[in-house]
Amino acid sequence: MKGPPRVGICSTKLISMLNILIACDHKPSRENLVHILTAHPAFHIIAVCADTHAAVAITGSEQPDIVFVDGSSDPLAAIEATKKILSFSAAGVIALSRQPDASFAKHMQAAGALGYLGGGFSAAEITMAVMEVARDNFYCSLDTIHVPVPTPERLSAFKRTVAALRNNGRKRLNETVASHWYNILRFTN
Image (cartoon, rainbow, N blue to C red; front, top):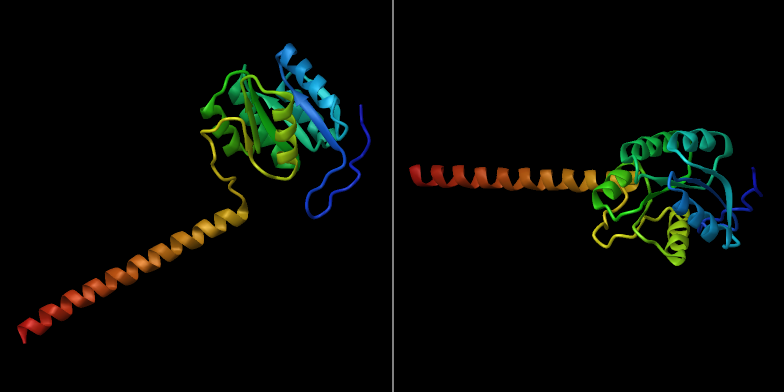
């Protein structure tokens, strides 16, 4: 079921063809996704499966660009599948849930998913999610979740900020202690 290869990615992440894998155990949701995604000229569905275990195996052999992982029935299996998929693949994972669930969205983001669609999502929203995740941007259909993706650059910047705050705090503490002892010595002499 291999489709046309990706034509090319330039430095701005413009993609002319995206290979997509859908792992969804809910047949109506799965059929809706297939219908919406096949209507877009830049999307090519390489496989559709009903469980996350099959998604992990197919990702290993087919190397999709985008993987939809449904966590409505078994959220823990979806989280584990996402971790496994991202351990050997550069695919962008989009989590699906039939009901909006901020907790599941946060857990999937922590596992490495770049997208989350919860509840009744439209064709435009699915297309937007795929395009954003293909550009390595985070997309979430919930307004309550705007946590930045912990990329290596952001983690190192955070560590530098924490180190600077610690150094600044030590400097102020040292200045306070020195000032305190200076005042004690000044009044005792």
